[in-house]
Length: 197
Image 1 (tube, rainbow, N blue to C red):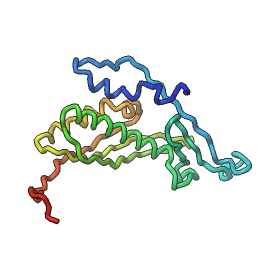
Image 2: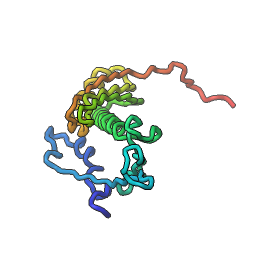
Image 3: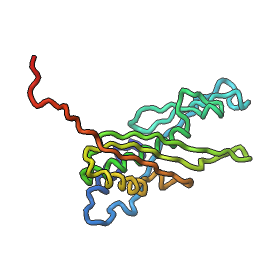
Image 4: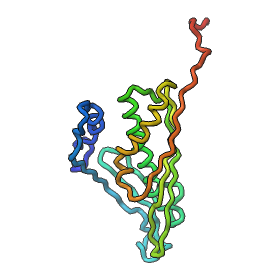
């Protein structure tokens, strides 16, 4: 088992411990979690990086015990458009972190979420050196809950989820939140009798 094996990590129980803490304090404060991965470039087409347009951008990333992730650069940087690029993965990480934090908070407060989707958008700006950075990301979660009476609280929990999201807290650019919560319509056509054959 390698040092970054998820079975050895405390990450699995991290959220459960945080949610089970009813004393008002944070039992997770000060704990350190370590992560690791393996990345291999798969783009050598025979002459390495001899020319900028002569090598592939494909890579394979692996975390012990998890599926292989194949990726490439953004097509603007000669990458394969069929594969995820680092910019895609950053957006997905931000969106997923918010979603997982939000769902946990709703479960803790007895708010039943029945649907959740997000369409995150990010802006990256290239600088004069040829480098660049993300300048902003907008998360746009659309959430459906089961009880209309809990809609206001469900909306409030987005701000809490945003403040505890590890990924958003690690970014040096603004991560804006434009969330929408609606209550599921009650289906008045539910049959009370058993269907006849």
